[in-house]
Image (cartoon, rainbow over the protein chains, first blue to last red):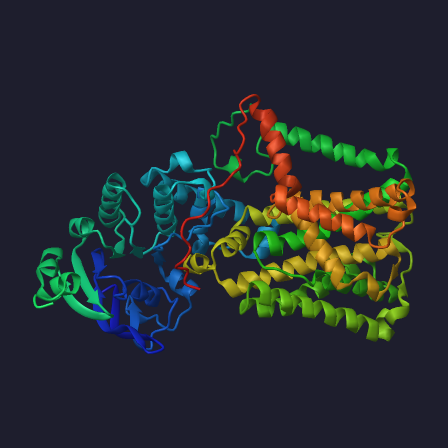
Length: 256
Length: 358
């Protein structure tokens, strides 16, 4: 079996700050891979490197065996990598349905001119898109919010809508940036179920940045711990949590 | 109150969502067809201005209202369309061809002006488009041989497919048909992936590109379409005025076009048309009022800009959603009567946006 995604000696530097320093890992198909670490450890930076928002200073990322580090974000999305954002980046002045339909954008077969005329082909793809999106709506139980404007929705629902938008892409790899931040206990529980279902039922590989260790231990196959841009430990959730370097990063050294 | 039972996805794609809408729009269509036969010529002429300004506003709305890119040089695209039409007509091109070509010239210019939009945003883009506006204004004044320079350029009489457009009545149908086609096209865009990509770019560039939207491509399309539609309006404008000179396409006019959008309501096609109608009607009312006002006020030179300034301030303060927003509220009030609540349209402030990537 080949890894779906690899990071190879990935480094990125902002001025004098090494946000990510020589990090390597492999993500296998159909696993949930979690990145943990204290604030400023470089977790979100790694996400931005994978999805092409940042260029690595050195090292590279491969997806399905191909280097992707030189591609633009939209090209990377088209390969089948979807993501969510830590602070929710939804299209606020559009309905939930429209937000999810944007997720189908990479699968369009029509150009702007056909859209302008709304040719039968456009109509057909729109209906196909709608069918896919409705499956996602059903999966995430968003029926009630289908026609609501995002700007009026509570935080917890927005979080789910953002997950839904990423799922509408039918991606091969899903990057979740703190899926449980800002959610209450019950909503976090639901999020855990969904991540398990995304892996088992939809067969999508998930890379997740998360602080809630309860959620991490529940859904992750492997956990990668980072501190100050460098690798600390890699293994199952229990192994990583017991790792001395991780304990030190979170709680400080024994002599501290 | 109307309850919509949705049984097919087609229902959400249709232009008319239910029978009531189809009925009222048909009624409106009939009224518009009958209007020029009933109204005096003077008001038909004003309606023609409304239709032409509506086309411009719809064009500008694509860029400002839907894609979130600012342009304060749009009068230049209007000028490009107008002068191209004047020039081509002077060389004996048939109207259908010269109209298409005017839109094309403006559209291609739009692509070029859109180039800085791929790099800069907000204020800087505004400055870049403004500079473009000045360049075109100056260019028109200098290019004597094509534009007639500061002395201006006359247009010959217009003939469309052999029908002479020699009265306001005929002009009315020409402008109305073009407006209807433009609105139909833009509505089509909005219910298809291209329109959604525009809105996505407006609301969050960062997640738009992570959803697979090529920002450069769609911003360029938005600029090109917006400019082309404005050019189309420019060609009609040229025939409406019959005389073109550079001082008709100034920086101030670009600002006026933006004010029309704000007053009408940014982000909807209705807003563009309401704004254009409001603009022309208020202008006429000011002209009428001049005779009634005491001369000390009525004969002041800056009367019209002052009144428009006040109106703009009032809208920004009291109805940021514009005339369309007001219309929505009034309609909802009657639909829900007596259950309308104050503050129904108030939106929550967006959640933390401090950690934006760019």
